Amino acid sequence: MVGDELDKLIAAAPEAQVRAVLGQLLKQYLNPVFGALPKAELELAMLEALQRVGAVEADPGIYELISKLRVTKPKARNLIYARELRRHSAPELDERMKQLLRHPLLQKNGELFALEVENPLLSDHLRARLQVLGHASDGSFSSSLVLLRAEALAALVASCLTADEQEKLRRALVKAGAPDSSLRGLLAGGLKTLGGKLASKAGEAAAEQLADYLGPVLDGAIKPAVDKLSGLFRPAGAS
Image (cartoon, rainbow, N blue to C red):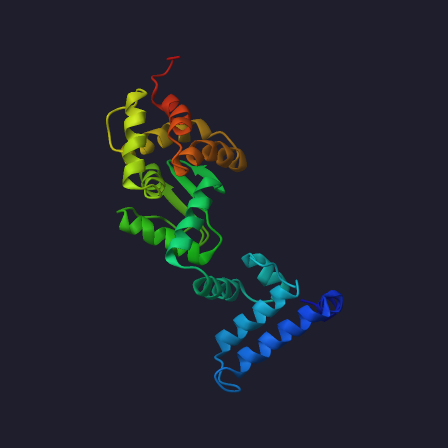
């Protein structure tokens, strides 16, 4: 960030805010004693100070840190990772993962769904959840792009519901004409059918349409979910 830009932001900020930011920064540097704060913690304290004066967004992306702080991409990722690790518990990361699936930045890549997860901690959390569920993810193409098979995406979505919600949705789908299978199996089959329909769509359009299907499921809204998903199980040409 250019010094003149920072000077303008500080000059425009309320005096009480600037005093509070400076006071917090000095307290952090003096804890536990002067000069003992590790470099990584000092960098996080400086990042927080920049955020509080408006020099950096409250939830910055990797490119913003690269461009404004003039750091490398690995450095930017490490800063975000360390910051997020201190701010979010596992349940909070679960909720963020659910929100990500509700409004995905997603493309269809052949037989795979490509889910964009820029936040490095959330990406690791999602991959760990997939591993527990017995599915692998491919991130070799890009550290922020998670490639998933329909079965893996279905398992991830189903895991966001309680066992009772899963069973109620499964029964409702079977009653509406879906095959009598596990909810994961039903969702995987539906996603494969939907994937074929989305193959020709641009990434943004595909993500928007996928969100229309996944949103009711993630909300545990049985009737809207069945209304959207049941059509994916109808034989071709059926009304």
